[in-house]
Length: 288
Ligand code: NAD
Image (cartoon, rainbow, N blue to C red; front, side, top):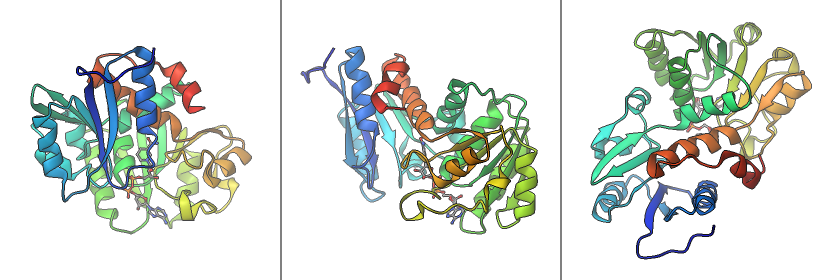
């Protein structure tokens, strides 16, 4: 059933900058339209300069909710009334729900990744994962993996501005989240190969493989991948990064960033509308 904008239509927003390239408006509006729900999801160019006014506007205009993306995922927390425990643990928000003027910040990236794994037939409980990355996407995945029962996580990162965050996340996982975690320098290729071979799941949670780095990966050769293991990438454009192509060449099962994107959106959709996103229809729509 196709929607028509009426006087009753409720607004959902995506606030980020730059954001016009995002797949979320097409995905969310298709799902809303498919279920005949009277909402419209629109993009707004919002950076940290106009973020406080934009959040105020959500209250003033009684916007039902929205998504938050870069560069606002951390900065937005200070303007909200409540945070879920997951958002507190991740120190970031990607979804806002407005209940009669009370704005709650959620993070659905991590659960989106874990639901993507489950949809792929992979149960993370009791497994060991090796993951490269310590930024926003990586931390959301690491925290949710621990909450979902992963046995052990080996984290690799380069020595850049994210290193301190990687150390903090490792301490959080070992302490509060009761999950064994070890941090390694990504330059330690012997440790990388050893940890990958000791894991059930290997994940890229960096932007390496996108745009100018399309034909580059930090993996020296396909021999680093353990044949038969599941290898995932957070990137969905391109749909098959060099990282995933090498993993396939090594005989691994692979999953790109589309399921994480779909399921993080599905979680947000349920929080705003109370309805489940029509997943099978959305897979066809997104050509996943
Ligand atoms: P971020 O900037 O917070 O973190 C970037 C990470 O990449 C850091 O760990 C950094 O150390 C690492 N890195 C940067 N250059 C590197 C290099 N040359 N070699 C190795 N590591 C390097 O970014 P983010 O928000 O975590 O996003 C990371 C990726 O995840 C982006 O491509 C983003 O589009 C994607 N993402 C996908 C989804 C999804 O739903 N599929 C959701 C969120 C983010």
